[in-house]
Amino acid sequence: MSEQQSWDVIIIGAGVIGLALSLELKRQGASVLILERTEPGREASHAAAGMIAYLDPVTQKELLPLARVSAKLYPEYVRLLEEVSDSKIDFRRDGAIELTYQPLEPSTVDGVEVRELTHEELGLLEPQVRFRSHVYLAKEDCVDPRTLIAALIGAVKASTIKMATGSKVLEVTHEHGRATGVRTERTHYRGNVVVNCAGAWAAQIAPVDIPTVPARGHMLSVVPPHPQPATEVTPPEPPGPPLRHVVRTPDCYMVPRSDGRLVIGSTLEPAGFDKTVDPRRIQRLRAAAERFVPAIAQMQLHEAWTGLRPGTPDGLPILGETKLHGYFACTGHYRDGILLAPVTAQVMGELIRTGRTSADLSHFSPHRFGG
Image 1: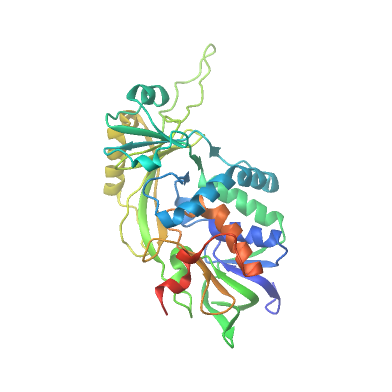
Image 2: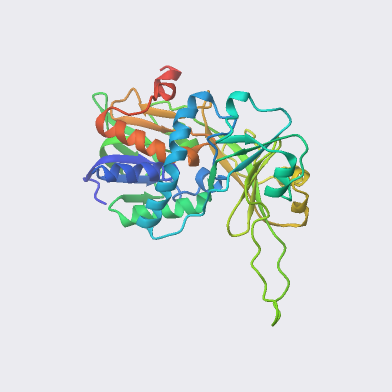
């Protein structure tokens, strides 16, 4: 890539948000360059659980309109991504079961999208789950973020979007109050618009303060025991996931993958940018899951990892143009980057290309923090 080339849009960060936005902008006819400090999709997106949890009762009310639209976009979004990338996304539509010691607010239980289950119904839907308090079934989907990221990367490669990896961005360059490009440790790229999709690292880029902070979360996955060796009479069947639904409990959540893994999450602790795995936290997380699904005690640990969620002072994303004209923030999605990726790409694509958007983004303005 020539240093003299100019791009319509430069996107900083190749996580799920940056990749999704790049494809939307390209669809609208923009020339797009993505700059990524490490490998595409290897940070928070790779570590996520993948719940499309727009009915989760802990979701902040300001996020609900965007979350609902994004969840409705997902089936077609997945179909198109699979088509463009020629890859398969593990997208499951079996719903989520909410286990809670206190009943949900009556306004959130509509009998259609969310309904209360009897313990007999729970036993039929998920025989492995042990719980004797309030149980609800939500019509939610889930996705394996790693297959989603692979499809996004495949779609980017199938387009004329350019990507430069190993590019640590130091600052957004500007003249007369307008962004003119990006300076990295190695070179300078010129662009008419710059979008900061750098997640937990967004605050490290000068000159505008975009206040994201990393919030570390531990996660693990377990798999069923290996099947018995095949015989001539009974060939072994590949083990499936021990749960069919996403299961959310007061202490953890469990997300099944179609290849037999069960993802268990998540802790939350301040740790800066340290992604070291603490075995004690993993052990406590697994023990919490075993209290609700005792069969997990017989399963094998497959993987343990941490991820750095991009948090913000008020827990809401930062979406919109900054005080530097032509420089946009599109970050701070915290736990909801996977959920909000389709709608974020849609509304930010509209805003960047036309100056208007179909969604109310006032709650997410970069200007709400002052300065």
